[in-house]
Amino acid sequence: MGLSKAERRLISLGTREILDRLNFNRDIAREINSKNARRAKIGDHFRQRILKRAFNTVGLDYGVILQRQSKEFESTLKDLETFNARMEAHSKRVSQRHQQLFKRLRKAKMMWHSGSVNIPPGPAPGPIQPTLVGYIPTPTHFDLQDMGTPQNATITVIETGANRGTFLQFDWSTRVVDQWNPFITATFNYLWTPPQDGSMGIFSLAAYNGVHYWAFSPTCGYPPFLDVSFDSSITIQQIDSFGHVFTEMSPVSGGIHDGHEGGCLPDSGHKAYDFIDYLQTQSPFLVEKNVPVMITITITGDCAGLMGVAGELNFSTKSGPITQAIALPGILFGFTPS
Image 1 (cartoon, rainbow, N blue to C red):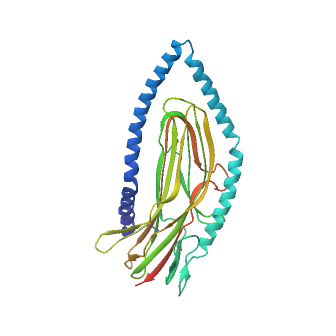
Image 2 (cartoon, rainbow, N blue to C red):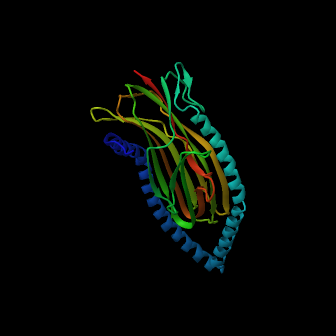
Image 3 (cartoon, helix red, strand yellow):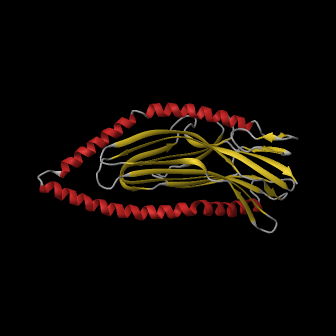
């Protein structure tokens, strides 16, 4: 069944507003990082020339030192590969835990309740008095902007079976570059039309299950670094009968915020991500009857690497059932007629 004109308009206008609010600061940060990277590259090349002259002056071959550093770096990468099997097995256990949580959310599907109810699971939303508790399992529409390295992000929707959900997958990797700055923005739009005027509360979660490794080539010049930043948010919107887009957006939640920096000695690490972002708005959202409401989950993320870094951020499953991914189980909402 196709979307109505009102639904298409809500998706277009609503998503545009969400991305403007979420990406404005990120876009500026990306521009600044790019300019800083160019300055750092110029400065590092200048320092390398000075070091080479200084070593040559005292009769030392600077090229031999660089070759030794390169061998140490390759050895570090081989050591990191020995953890891959353990990381993959861990991701499967994480996926099982997340699916158990998803099942709890799905149990609330279309429950009628006359009294107070706490929406499961997790820390949030507190008691409400809904006439209807509804569940929307999969997005009506989704969109993906992938500027990864490589560009391989996918969104998969599985509607039946034990591994149900919506899964964002990607695998970014780099080897010893002057600058690395992949980023991603994914929006997942869930639509529902209220039968009466009233108010809504919404709740969902984003389950992160992935792995990350990093390694720095030793250098006593400009220190290499690698930053990873991912955020989750939820928004509810409706265009009223006068054509105004009303929006209630949750605070940006949890996500990933990791930073690593190299130096004169080799440095590396391996990390598994296993956490849940609980997503909800802070107050009831007033809605008009027979006018579509859009609930949007947005995942935004960046990597920023500079000056001789190898790294990977992997939220993908190579074969079999999906395990490593950023997974969404659907939307739970409460509706109270006015």
